[in-house]
Each structure stands twice: as structure tokens, then as C-alpha cells.
Image 1 (cartoon, rainbow, N blue to C red):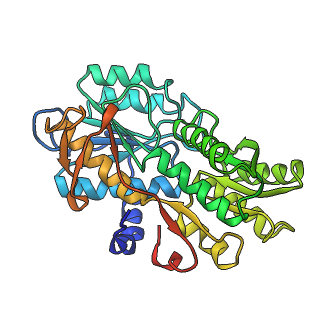
Image 2 (cartoon, rainbow, N blue to C red; image 1 turned 180 degrees about the vertical axis):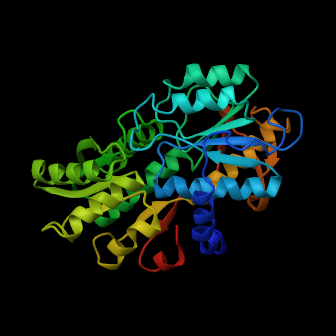
Image 3 (cartoon, helix red, strand yellow; image 1 turned 45 degrees about the horizontal axis):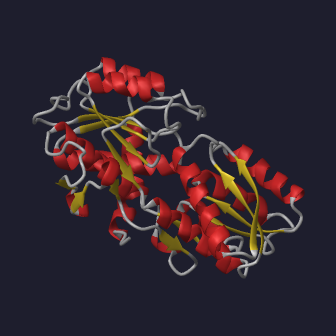
Length: 341
């Protein structure tokens, strides 16, 4: 994936502006016609939880997109509760207020479906991003699931010499994207890395302290552990924080999916050598453009539909209503200073 570095330079300012503008769903009635068939799009953005830098960046990207296509984005969502039902009241409120579209990173593949179907029956378009559900119009995927899984396996194998015990520190046990990546990582390890043994998978629920504690527990339970894969920005940062001041620094490798701003310290001090991610600002930007295209009737979400997403150019809807942002990008000491999100 080619990442627009100029965008990152402005991201902090955009995110600050966005945070100052946060309001309850539909708290501002301007923003144009929320229905389909033309007009500007009023979009409610519902991340897994508020206060996560990853989702701060994706919302900033969505708001930047809305500024370009003449729409409006409001961010609402749970704070500190990543439970499967925690997003339901926000979906219900947005439905009652008649927004044009919902853009949701789902905490559960099925728990939101009743509320989403109610929204759809009111002609509200539903786009998921980052983590999917079984009941939406379109899913904007950060990268191909197989590519994400393979990249993380590639990185850990390289760092531990393709041999030894590894463990996975995930987010919530019911997170759709995490579980898909874990399934694919397991298959890759079994097929291509016979000398690497996956000994445990634990869940930090995208909570910093719980992820920190789970890292400590993993290392106590598995004294021969050679590496940890954490496919979540909260988890990898918490694991790195634990390793950085422990006896395991430099002995246990850590990789996964992380935000450069959170991981720079650990790259600089040698706790972590490489990790991967995509640009969450681009992900939110693309999701907002997809929602706008649905609201305006330019696409329906069927395979083969095409739309233009601003400076990300043209995208085509794939099978099962999936739009893929691009390939994961690897961050290391040679490039970590170039990225600010």
C-alpha cells in the first residue's frame, strides 16, 4: 500500500479539530439530506470504542472526506466497554434521528444485526469498516485478510529464526476481524512453518491494562516463549510496554498491528524491530466515501460496482460487498519517524 505521507503531517491537527467538534449523534441538524437519491450525506461513525488513537485517526479521515463531498460526520460510541451489545443504543439513536448512513466498526458479527436491520428498513445505508457484521450494505476492509495474516506470520518467523514457541495476544474474543486473522495465521503456521509452535491465544479486550497483564501472564505460563503476535494496536503497545522494562526485552520478539505514534518509543529502544498496519485515516476516508456513494445511489453494494474515493481514486466492490483498502505496510527504525498517527 502506498501511503500519502503528507496526509500524516496534517493528521494531528485534523484529529484535534475533530475531537473539539465531537457531538452526540444528530446533535447538529445541518449537513443536508440524509436520504438516498442525491444531496449531501449525514453519517454517524460508530467505532468499537471512543478514545482509541486508531479510531481517532479513522474518524478524522472520515470527517476530511465529508468535507470534500459536502457531507457531515458525527462520531459516537461506547467508552471503555467493548461488549458485543455496546454499540446497539448508538445505532438505535442514529436510526431515530434519520441519518443517511452508519459507518460501524463492529464489536460482534451478529449482536448488532437487529438494530442494523431496523436502520436499513428506514433506508439508512450501513457500511462496516475494520470489523464486519453479517448484515450490512458494504464492508470496507483495511486489507485482504489473508494478506494481513500472512504478513504477521512472515514478521514473527523472521524475528525468531523460524523456530520456537509463539503466542497471540488478541483484542475481544468475539471480534470478527481478529478471529479471521487468527484462523488464517494458524493455517499459515501449520502449513509453512513446522518449527514454530503456537502455544496460546489470549484476549486483552482492547484494554491497555488487561493487555499488559495478559502479556505478563503469557510469559509466566510459557517460559520458552520466543515471540508474541498482537493483531491489535492496543494490545501490541501494551505488550511492548511490558517487555520494555522486563527481563524478556531482546529475548522475546513482538510484532503485530500497531500505530506508529504508539510504537516509536519501542522501535527506538529495541523492544520491537518491525510491525505492520495500514493507514487508519485512509480507512475512515474510504469508508465515508463508500457511505456517501450508497446514500446518493451511485452504488448499491453489489459486486462490480465502482466509485471514486477522493484522492484514493477509483475502487471496485468485490465479492460479498467488500471493498479492500490495500496491502499492510511494515514499519521499522528506517521509516518510523515519517508517520505521526
